[in-house]
Length: 319
Image (cartoon, rainbow, N blue to C red; front, side, top):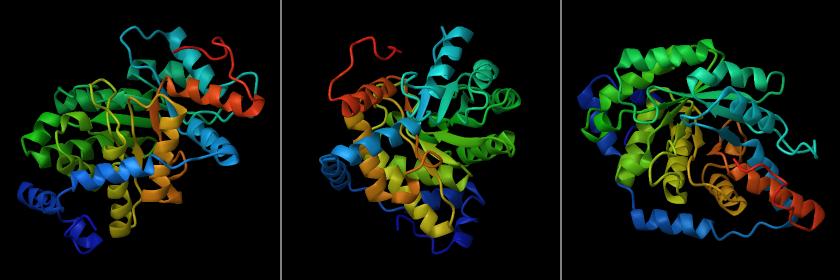
């Protein structure tokens, strides 16, 4: 168990003060970086073939948060993204829908209309994404705007500066406040920006901090920095959610985001999920891919399995 706490009751008290929270987080066992990376690499060599590969591709498609987070986003682009989320391959209606579309708060209403009646969720980044450098009231207004427009999920970024300065209670309190602003209608994904946290120990601490504060998902990255989701940092977060559920009975999802572009990559991550957290997480309610171009490769590989040949370059849209 990556915690010194002995029960869920003890965990409920760890955020009573800055000192108790710091003591808990720094009491977590240190991460064996060599062992972590070796296990992630080893699991990445698993070979998935034929029917298992077909199942894995459809599962991965159903786990994609199809994302556009650019300053040049327009209503037309978001509508097209929504249509692709609902019918990833218009020529084959057996293709699963994606889990969600992810957009900025001002595009939530457009996205909501585009996926209406499909079961595809609308996720919105908030809290001054991607830097998180804003006052709390501004961050909460961002969240409330997205929820009021119909967002089913909120992807918030933590204040990495506060976290790295050891101001853990400030980060905890912000997550709690954002969770409250989500109300009962929106699930909360907490983004750590693992590439900026510097160490695996910090990623473990951030994982537990986010879960203690009420995150429904913990998410690696914004996709806006040099280092985003990796097998090793995702494995570490999967270990954290597994152990958190064992300790508290509460299940939390995981979302690696940024840099996952190929079917081969996606399947490696699914193996990590199955072998680390277990089959309970092999569902889009508990595991997501934050991606845009990944879906295109999944669709091409899906057609290859069905027809025995790769499609032409115009088979899927290039996002």
